[in-house]
Length: 146
Image 1 (cartoon, one colour):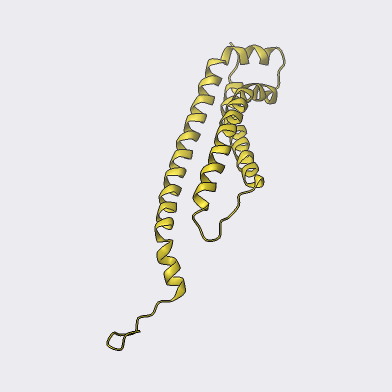
Image 2 (cartoon, rainbow, N blue to C red):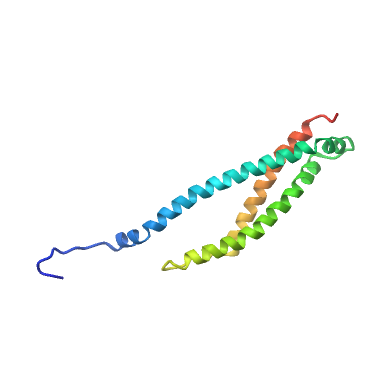
């Protein structure tokens, strides 16, 4: 301390807030773009499911005439999407872990992501896939076969 200068003080929480302000800004921007990307991907998956169900209308009609249940038809339609979601998750999960691990090393107290977190995201993807493949499948099953 110098006798001619006024005493300046800072609270510790303000110092930490200033240090991590940039990280908070990046987090908000990443959240907005992640939500936007997920929304666009969901629209794409729904459009693909609707397109596939529309293309297979005749096959669905023949299966209905032969006694197939709506659940069986929806499972048949969603089997292809299960493969796509599984492949995308196998690619995305290690990539996400690697980049999160690199990013979190810069923090004072790094957080560890566990396998449970990735299992939750996998469960969310599967739940979403079943919901969005069921709607076009049900819609195509409601049409009367010609």
